[in-house]
Image (cartoon, one colour):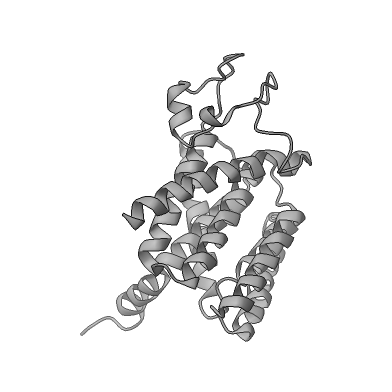
Length: 257
């Protein structure tokens, strides 16, 4: 029962995340005006703004202008629902649930803005930083030394990767937004296994990039936003970081026998 409520709550919050994703880069207030169709400007009433259900009832189109509603909207609502549910299943109704659910919501906003604009906005990073520090101050999820070292280690490692990438490719291979994103995100993780979290993100990026090149969906040298892949790596780390480390250690470092 609580799991179902967590999923529903996550879809509702996912609907708000869609508002953030659309409005923040366009410098529109998150409060006013009410939800509207970007094409024709018609106000969307509450009964047509129900997460997931409204998209299905409207068959993915605006009721007035029939403009297709981007698939991003139900996708973000689903992501919000499932991540909220899985976070509840992992942490229960604890302060850690609030801490990491907030973390995941920021990752969703950052990822979809990066996909659309190829930018990681400082405004969102500042809010994410404030949320991480504030929630940790209230709930004491991580020792502050770990959070601070996570900030320094995450940003430092990404800065090193950016420098090495520039040397290898003789052009900018990673934006400073990715560096700042890693630094702020690692406040939520601490410093102990930052390398694992970032490695997960780079591995996902590499596999998807190779797949896209094989399908001729992209080409060598084309800019690919790194933020969504880092976000996926960070999410995987939160849920399965310890298991991955144990598996790696037992398989490659100290195999049995």
